[in-house]
Length: 291
Ligand code: GRG
Image (cartoon, rainbow, N blue to C red; front, side, top):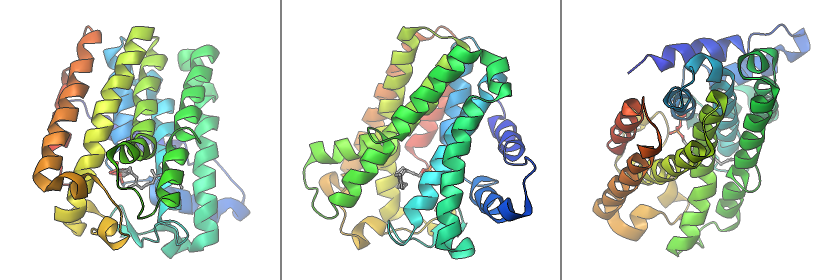
């Protein structure tokens, strides 16, 4: 498998290194604190892999991969705030608001969210894929990150605290909170490469399966995981009285679901002619992830 991580780290650094005034230094520092050298980079890695599987290059898809990771990082910063999950550890270090205070953490999240769309439509992106594809990728990112996607999923979570007891409600929440942004990452890769509508649909199906598997594995790790390896606190769902796939099916049943959803993801790859080996390998690797 290519060293996608190295390419991504360099690009994330580059796109947050622009010159800025002394007044803005603090918020840029806070943005970079949560963004750089941290996280598994699952969403942007998928963007690059799908670009290659659709006959394009990882390089051309890089701005969109960066944008997706920025939106993801903003969501983590906001999610850790005392008015949301009130968590003090993220990506192996103090949460953003612990270091920078709640006001700057909020702004760092806002800064990453808006910069993401600037990058989707920046000169590099337009030169690489043209205005039309860049605009379509930005549309996809806003749609899946927004109120009918990730923000909507978070809304279900906030409003239903402790009250979700049915699988269909849980499924809807996970579809928003976790699956939606993974879909954006995968689809943007296909768009950047000029892939077909059939490939866009297949990327969406892959992300559907992978996203469900990813979240259910997350539920398992919230019980069995090691905080040092995970880089975040565990036992959060139990502490917050949250219903999840482990409370519904037990640890063994939940892991079976992880495997079934991963199989669905892998089956969706038939729509691509080449370069799906790494996407298959990646999905299978996540089945037993410990972080
Ligand atoms: C809009 C405020 C707001 C929040 C959005 C995504 C989200 C909702 C909250 C984050 C908390 C959470 C547990 C979300 C589920 C998705 C998930 C498993 C996130 C963690 O993703 P990883 O494991 O994290 O890819 P790293 O740090 O590796 O990037």
